[in-house]
Amino acid sequence: MVKLAEPRPLGQIRQPPQSPRYLIFLLIGAILLITAYKGADFIEVGEDGKLRLSKKRREKMEREIENLKEAEQYVLVAVTDGWYPCFNCGMYTTIFLRKDEEWRYGVTIHGKKKRYGEAMLLAKGLRYHIQYTGTIEDCLIKEKERIYYYALLPENLKRAVPLKRPPGNKIDR
Image (cartoon, rainbow, N blue to C red; front, side):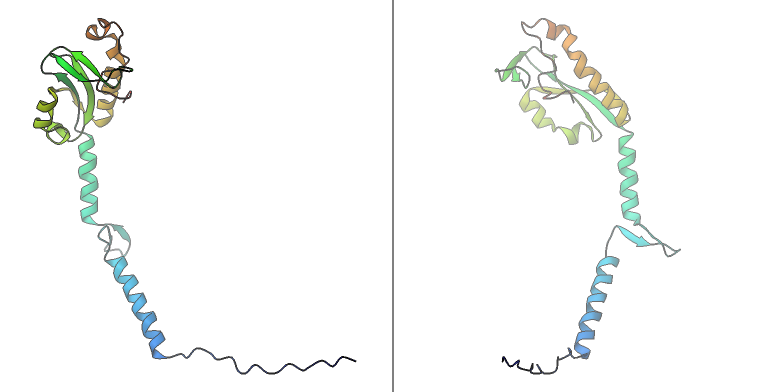
């Protein structure tokens, strides 16, 4: 006959001590969490006790929205006859443009100085002309129309192989 051994007591399971040290760490953690949350510079508590965007964040948003109402659609044209980069010329990487022929269309809300520096334009042999000003939406529409209708410009049609879009626009945008 097999005798079964009785299980031995394992001893008492020790409870973690409820020391003040544990509570202090918990309290410090809660304070750090609240401080981090309150320290967020993009949220503030209003007079009604509800959370809202901070004044600084609201003002930034309003400035950016206002900028979208003051955009410009521009064209970059060749300053002199010469070879310019071409992103639409198949195996060729450059194209010969005559003075005042259009190289690229674009839209900006920052104006010429922020979009292109004068030195950069001169180095590339290009000049910046504003073609249309208005809201960002209107300018994007004008830009899109000009890119697509570039194919029908006389300067493009006289080429042996006309381009689908201006040489400086990589895509239809």
